[in-house]
Image 1: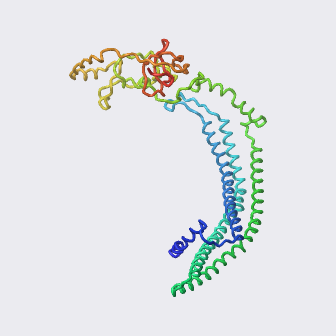
Image 2 (image 1 turned 90 degrees about the vertical axis):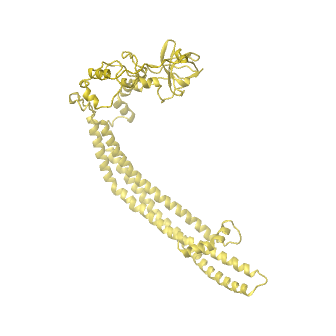
Image 3 (image 1 turned 135 degrees about the vertical axis):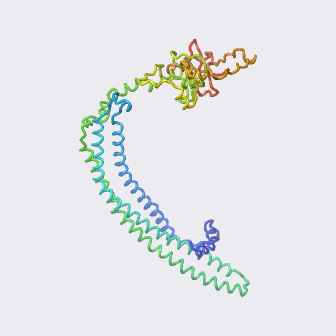
Length: 442
């Protein structure tokens, strides 16, 4: 907006405020009001026609692109799954060559379909989207003319109100006479400008509406026939799609069941996909593990000194379906040496492992630490046993869980401050985990 336009906007602001709240007298032309309403509908529907045509164009292209990406993803899934790369002798190739070949053939068919539909999609762009965009540009120019007419109407009403105010004044001074003459001149000029734009729009808008109907008729017809060509090409290409991997003689559901075979049953037999329920309130699906479980999964070198029982599986191993099995090491690490240890960060000694001679020599050369101070009397006694009361029935859902009934008293072995996590306790002579939100403390 130029500075002159800004000045005019400031001058018209009071009259625009009056027109918005219907204060004072305002010029109204019913013929133009009806034409302007129809023109606004034409603007909205033309914009909608353009947008929906563009969405259809993008949807067809996107559908073909997604089909190609789908076949690529299936090819990656079907690719062979190999064993350990560090041991070539243990390599076991597992894959689906027929599925990979079918995916490649499907991708080639879709790419050929994409090339076949490219001319039709370009016609949609040239015969529907572009003409609609050009019509939008024409309507924007007409909208500017309608805005100009609205500004001239404000000027006409503003000058007309000033003239009437001066004419109604009973005693006029010389200055009032001068202002009256200027107001008459302004009203005459504003009337000419307003009538020019008002008559122009009232005369030209009906012609535009007639031309718009003639414009839409071939546009819709072209879009209809292009859609028919696209759907016919899609049907013809996919109907002639002959990939040996698919059995097109069967129904869709029958072919799916036949290809699936017993895979679903074999998958459900895996322990990692089983989840039994007792019909009661379910424990939280995810939550922090109790400190005892986290401690059970740490390396032995990070635990405090104490006796260990490697033959007994920990609760963490039982909970997540792991069994304590000796690690099979095909290539054992080299023996510990003092020179190698000196280059690494010192770590805590293992709990029950044999000490190397070099480490024993280093330990013997250092002075022994003083004995620890005696414990206070209040800590010498055994802490009281903490118990909780079960609020609901709970059935063990995995190895390492304990079952109980509502009202049973459970002895706490380890628990956290959050009752939405798993706790460890003893009940009916068994020790295991249970959800903390199934019991009441105290």
